[in-house]
Amino acid sequence: MKITAIDIYRGQSGKLQPILVRLRTDAGFEGWGEAGVAYGRGAAAAAGMIRDLAPLLLGREAGAIEVFLADCHDHTFWGKNGGTIVHAAASALEMAMWDLLGKELGVPVSRLMGGPVRDEMRCYANGWYEASQEPDDFARATERPLKDGYTALKFYPLGQMVGRNMRHVSHRQITREAADLAVARVRAVRKAVGPDVDLMLDLSGGVIAPEAIRLCERFAEFDIYFVEEPVDPADTAGLAEVARAVPMPVAGGERHYTREGFRPLFEARAVSIVQPDPGNTGGLLETKKIAAMAEAFGMLCAPHVCATPLSTEAALQVGATLPNFAIMELYPYFRHHDGWNAFVADPAEARVRDGHLRPSEAPGLGVEIDAAAIAPWFLETLD
Image (cartoon, rainbow, N blue to C red; front, side, top):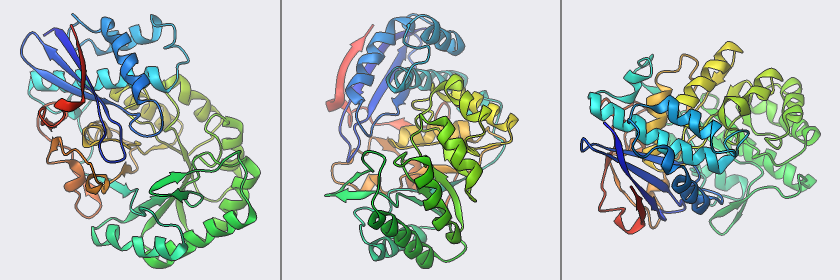
């Protein structure tokens, strides 16, 4: 089964700008993938990089995943020590190859990656706070995810809402007032949810190590499951400094790519929980390899997801196969935002029960795509 055409899509869905790819084959199968850059800046660049990588894939067997990834690393120049865009584009194409292979063989991707080690996976809710600003706003906002059965919530105590968009810390500095507000927000959320709900705090790489340590010491009384990216993700030494000093686990990896990019985190023991995103770290197979490295270092893996339900299903497939899986990110309320494109039938976000999800057992990623719904997003076909 050879890949004969690649369709690229770029659109707007609520707050996201998804980049999707469809691979078509000479056997009539289709496989779908997504680049994990639907938030922030970079969607247009990822679409262009997919176009640049297409010659490495067209005419190739759909199952030649390792060969494709090796070519992306060895024969693109920018794949070595590459950043977000090149690896997000490769991830989208690799994800679609797994979808194709599973459909051809009639099995879910998890079966092709060693088989699932669990029937369901715990998820934490993100995005539940919407436009909350004051501590009481955050406390009230917890009612929705708690009612929906979530037992773990993540939020950004240092984030500042500008309209309905969040702005993170500038210049790695915060005022005393901002620090006090962050602590008050966490205190309000903990009081609202009680002692049996896990809380994750994302500092989004906003402050320097000494400030992160001071904040985490103040957060400690609230029994925090993990603190994510307490310093700039490029500052491995700073992450390690924080990890040694604070009483809660440090998590990171959303902005690290491939095993080579994660290796410094492992060697410095800069994190306890790694968060590779299958949509930008190099794909599903790379995510599994990163998780295996983490396991060898005695670390847990919590796959990162901030994209459409297509990426959620992909993360579920690989996450189910990871012995050291801890928990997975979910944005359950994206689908309620104005302008959301419901192009995935039966999205995972609507199937959550008691804060847990079961991966699809349908062939491939188990995703049914409404191609008509994303037809306006079509950019081009490469063949």
